[in-house]
Length: 482
Image (tube, rainbow, N blue to C red; front, side, top):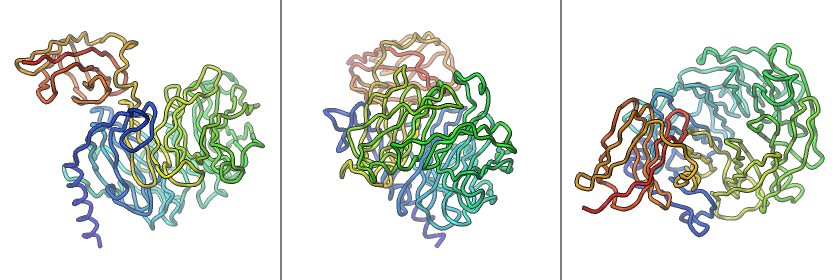
């Protein structure tokens, strides 16, 4: 059986290595067959192309700081698949980590530094730990991985969250503490240590932050926002041996509070309900809570979408909310100064309908420095990018590298002068389609880039900091005919 699966994955991997793809812009409301607004499709894998199983579920991401290479960790019922998206138009199905127990349609992964932590609802799965830098050296695709370490402190878990500042992990929905918090110290990434627990309520999902909002009583304190079905509970977890309840907030508008995320200024909490559309027949809603006063948070209403799809996981990044709303796909909203929301755009990853129920997208990861967005579906993986990120150059700062573009039609090359340190170079046509990329230049003074593969015409060239994802410069480039 082991040889059968190994051979299967190698065959699939060879197929995908030579699978040609091209970025598909969102035009006239569609990217290929997918309804969209404001987001282009870079690439797409079916569940079968990534190893199969009953269905896909959660996802997360990892970026190697030194090289800038980006990887999606895509969870499936039978394990986790790894896809490199450093070139998002030509991604590579890199590796597979088989499950540590029987299949489960609930699998969750989070990353701390260069380590991934994977939990499952399957009995006796525990927590798999995977050292990620090994992905950089593979030349056989996909490689079958073995876990780097295993934690058996619990049998199963519904979700796992990490506070990167405090290096603490929080498992919830385990076989301990009535499904409440199971807190582990990850200072030694391969040897988690149980340091605390909370059993006063069962928690479905959570977010842990070091608070830096306007309530000075809790500035610098580690807080955990627990989504408990019936309520949102805010905990002070600075002392893991004596976790304290700060607030318990219910909402008469909700049926089952599922998951949520805090705004970047720590003044608002945005959360979802995965039962109101099914039970109450409402449209999709994202609820808003003012958390400026941690002891007295206030529900201030909700944003209502124009669909009845069931919402699932949402995340906040760079002033936007990225919501995976099951059958209506990824819905992205802008956060206004007063904390309210306005729809920015969407990409529908499920074509059958926008009805309530548990189909389509499960989760997303919008934190890649390159601004690639991973969207995990139950039937596959999508790599997206906001259309405006390709060609909006009016507000971009001038380059600290002082680079100068000199097209040379005779040699089909571009000379760039200046100092380049740990950066990507990207070239887009004027429709926003990426046509050329040089990844993670570590340190070089002056470059000569062969662009003979690009047709003559007008393009936009961008210099991207590989670590932060910041755009350092953008220039219009004209390649003239010989």
